[in-house]
Length: 307
Image (cartoon, rainbow, N blue to C red; front, top):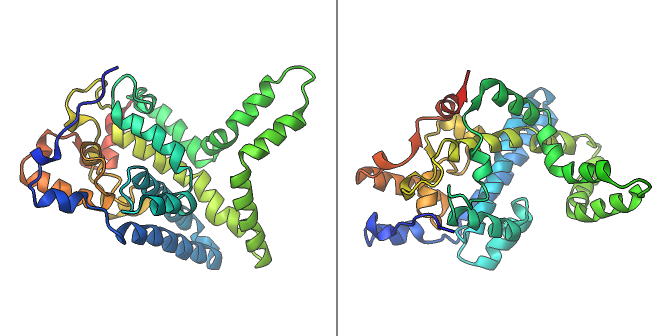
């Protein structure tokens, strides 16, 4: 079971640069988490005050929900904060949760990146695909079908395959227990908004972005990161793709430097906010020409689709 090839950061960065890039900050990660929640709060207020702005709010909030997942990802790598226990607590309660199982899964992705044992290989293996197939996926994302399948697919599959005469109530009870945290958090949020006379707001400014735009930008991120990257690629500079993002893409598709994915795979413990600086140094040294990269998200989508 071969693991993905590794590189030594000292081969690319000076003795002065590498400590600056790899050192965890006691405040930057916390500031990004706070930034995500402030943006979500402001966009929510905007949508509640002016409902006509709801489509924009859904995109902004969905992108920041992805941002929270990215910061949880940094915590999984031990990069969010120098205090590992604090970082895990923040990730668990302020960044959508589930950091421990995600860490176990995700580190396997890094260990076997683009190798046969990579647990994420199925995300990139189907590409290229037809434009019609991509359109169907986008429609499923934006209509909430992808979210529903991810959230309740196991439950509905269990109902469909239950044996004749098997009671539904124990199956339902088991699902409620499995989803207990999600149900409690969302139930309390709905109750709080209802107490303020805004029962609909939680559905509009949290669940709707989570079920639609978050799903779409998560798919776009996955496509940009690994689609059409060669399986069993021996070169560690080409295990993932970095995609240049303009300010609109950073606001609505690729928050918190997630587009610097090649650099992340090369140096997976570097905090996300230091990845742009890492790329600048690599570019100065002429390394980026050998790395997998794309000029933008539209160019990646064009490359992974055929007529």
